[in-house]
Amino acid sequence: MEALEQLLAEHPFLQGLPSRHLSRLVDFAEAKQFDAQQFLFREGEAAREFFLIRSGQVAMEIYTARRGAITIQTRQAGDVLGWMGLKPPYQWNVDARAMTVVRVITLKVEGLWRLCEEDHELGYDLLKRHIGCMAQYFKSMKLQLVSLVHGV
Amino acid sequence: MFPRLFRVARRVRETPDTCTLTLTPEGPGDFSFKPGQFNMITAFGVGEVPISISGDPAQPLPLRHTIRGVGAVTQALCRLKPAEVVGLRGPFGTGWPLAEAAGNDIFIIAGGLGLAPLRPAMYQVLENRAAYGAVEVIYGARTPGDMLYLKELQQWRGRFDLRVHVTVDAAGPDWRGNVGVVTNIIPRARFDPYHTTALICGPGVMMRFVVQDLLKRGVREENIFISLERTMKCGVGFCGHCQLGPVFICRDGPVFSYARIREWFERRGI
Image 1 (cartoon, each protein chain N blue to C red):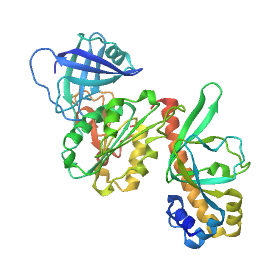
Image 2 (image 1 turned 135 degrees about the vertical axis):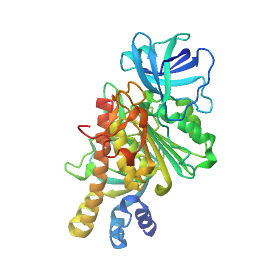
Image 3 (image 1 turned 30 degrees about the vertical axis):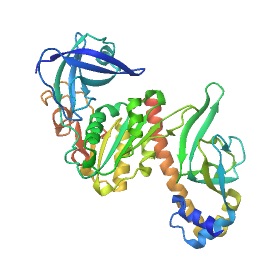
Image 4 (image 1 turned 45 degrees about the vertical axis):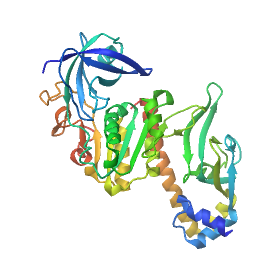
């Protein structure tokens, strides 16, 4: 458990989180590894986990019958994956495919929600971190859209 | 400022709409340029356009220009065949401040065709590699098929004394690299913000976002350099076509420190 808490503390998303909060997250956390080409999750599946990527590269893909899978973004070590699954209907709307061997820490969504309801201080801290990720995500999406749609 | 005649020695298709022309001068005469400078090139009977020099300043001749065929003149230039002749005036403008950057980390960020004016800077940095600290390069293209200078990018990635990151806006499942915008890579770049000179060229929106992120990381405004594009006509600050606030891009630029043009860079109404 200590090792897992250490892994959580080292991830940029949780950097600076007090150890009393980290130790509570450990109950819902698990270190996992995915082989290259293995899917972390697929569109339509229930979103039960939230991912902190420790190493490797993950392709976020949307499948189209006409063009096959289109990679819309890649995520690397230090990134978080799956905040879209943290809201109802708790279902993935893209595929996440490991491009290389990928090591992650997963956090169970259900447990995470319960914990945030019980401990608002922790919940608020995590919410702020999520908002930071979302802001960064939407900023890069804006730039990507401008480039793809308008070619500038 | 009459054009000199140059003959097309070679045309290489880089992407479906972009080519690199190799040009040799007609008759004797030297040519030298600084990384970041541009020439005014004439497609006879069609018109004249400013095009950045994309070759090695240590071997200025033959000249190399990478051109995207988007208008009448650039499309005419991209259609030229070996032995055909163009007119050329230049070199014009300021260059990347590589001498002033000595001792600093170098952070090169290019988007799309923006790699062309940065390639001479890369050559010069690599030729004087010991003069600089860490060298990081980020190159973003729309798709894998839109990437320029693939062989050189691969050579640069193979070196141990620099780090090259490549990303595209969209890709199919065969692509094994990054997908996303160049700003996604900046957090992963290794550089000392206080001792970094950043050289940026690409679409205006991209440069604006990159500048914001570099400032957030602590890079100083006076150490962020961007290469600007505006309709340049005379090349010598005479006609006013490329005026941006108090500066003329052809004469005072195209390379500016962000500190100098902050008030006018990518602002609505200017």
